[in-house]
Image (cartoon, rainbow, N blue to C red; front, side, top):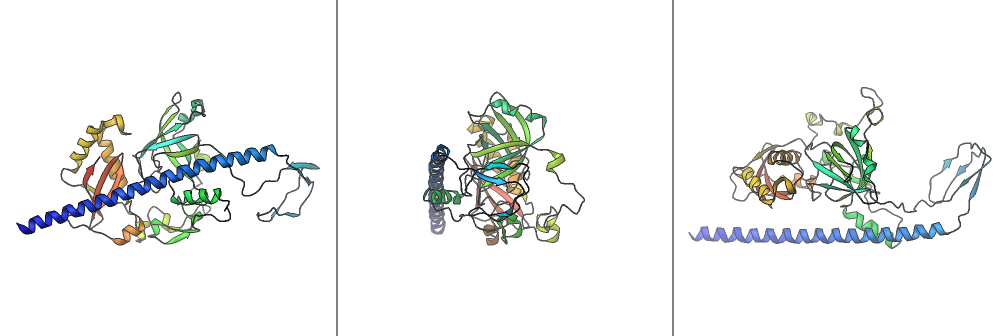
Length: 374
């Protein structure tokens, strides 16, 4: 009896400690997000003032004479050869390589991924990953007319949740523009953490954090300025810079030719060589876990507060996300395996559609969803 009470007290103390750590981490994430937003707003304001200041000055044109084949070197730029010009003289304005590009997002993307953890690493990996692009007021909904005639759309966006984005904004505000805060080489998940050059990967941590996602168009409301898509890999609240229709005749390279090739580690059948650490996991539900999730979803309001029309769609969405092993390379190397029947379960957590999902990894690449909570 005494041992049972002592074990209960230990479990309660452990639960309180885990809750405290989770609250601390959530507070730190909120603070970082607020700092990023503040720095980005301040940076945009200063960039606009600088651009207006430059525009008010008198620019001095530099002549380019016909048949100039000498190497022209601009400050901070690489050497390039100018082609023959078709006129005796044209005007070229002198621009600095570090001049800020000022643009306003055309819209915001809303999805079921509130955090980076759990968001698919690539588009189309989770077909049930739904989202909505909502155009901003300065962009007319008429800009969407004709887009529904296409099956897919390219979404160009900003990786706004990058932790190094705030550092980059701070460097810009203090005038330190000589070096990017992004690393030149990054760890690749499909290579189990091996490093590759950032431009040879699809990492979000890039010198200019712009992303590209191919999504399936589900519906469009021109009057409201909505575009509902599926298969996207964007976090909730992502700034959207542009939308472009997918054109198979020019966006898809011809297959079966030597002109199209990729490294072996990005091929779909890489798992057959034993090099694919992100092989899909078999996802199952612990007894009662799926029913508890259903009760919580309906208690929250069901489809009125969800991107999914019924609970079965939400179940499928969660299973597709977790089957892709959303753990980082560092977490996979820890190789934390939970034995069936263990006293403490729910080692890993992810938030999907506003619901916290706790799960364990068992031997044999089996993932078991053990608990959910709002």
